[in-house]
Length: 508
Image 1 (cartoon, helix red, strand yellow):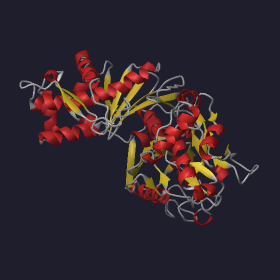
Image 2 (tube, rainbow, N blue to C red):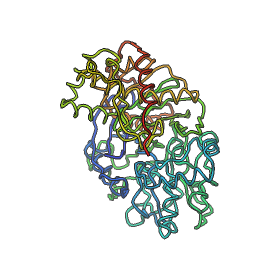
Image 3 (cartoon, one colour):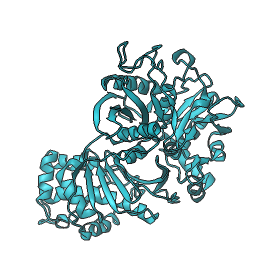
């Protein structure tokens, strides 16, 4: 059996899956925790990666590996390969003022045209501007800017600080993929290249793409990772990358792979793009992920440029594009209302399914944390349509689920407004295992709804890359489905929601 491995180095943890390359069947898996916070030293990711490999039984019988990772995190390196400061993660909002300044300097329409994005605090370009403005001494030391999966891939190949890596700090060996590059704010999905003028505007210094080999090295120019194509290999895992001269985690002298074992290393990808690969998403598929926040993304055949900033026009990991909209309020909406009602999630589902579609006219606009889609950062949640007759526990429970899903359907509307095709909806995330969420989704969305079986789809997508790099062909692994609720579209649910949301106080 030929085995491949995929990594999901997320904000919270590192997950590893080992799969049969022929069928995509899960053979074993492991995980390790990451520290909390909005800035984290990448060394924590490295230690968690090693621990997760060991928890998954090691790499001794694995032929190829690839890394999916949280997008946008800013990893700054000096000429010696040292991390200059802890990485600012996607959820670090201190660069919000930098995002506003960059938008003012370039213009939202021009930014969207050039990069597919309008800056918000999540994106890497805003974080390098923040460092330039607030930590100039550190900014002067920066020799390269990478993203989390870029840095992990580089380290796995044996590069890094001289004292901690077998091959030393060759910054020209940094690689990334188009999905990760497209989330920086200084790479163009339509042109397929870095926008070096934008990088210089943000950071105040020239930059160049890593050469992948020996070449002219200007010490004053910042190195950006070389962008690999779909199915490309970044190189091979160095057997001494974790400190041993000859062994990887899980290997021993009796390893079936033997001392000369070589593990091919795929290009890697951003988390949403890796999830799309893991789900086998194709043009026309829309993925709705219900986590702490909500994401709505689709695989599209053309680049998207939305000057409103509602849709971010990312590239995907297959050669297509991945327009995405994000909502701040998703699974936590259910937790909040369950807490108000004093019930667990099973009882919340029972109550919700006991009410009629439309919840007797009760509508929850679920802006508990403000909202990003639409852009109402200071708004609050509110119930509408309450009467003596409609104020029942069942209606409140159903209104919570309908409101959460209607908020996500706004992301679908935004994708469609940008011309993204939508023929099928894939519903993923822990909250979608709730039977009421599944049933009500078929009433809120005007698309066939499919609920894939729970799984580590980011890590699985990275494993798709590993198999692709190894064989030269993208595998077509089947995806198990837990539910496919019968279409039961009730347009009045969304119409009532839109009327209620139009009356929301935007705050100040």
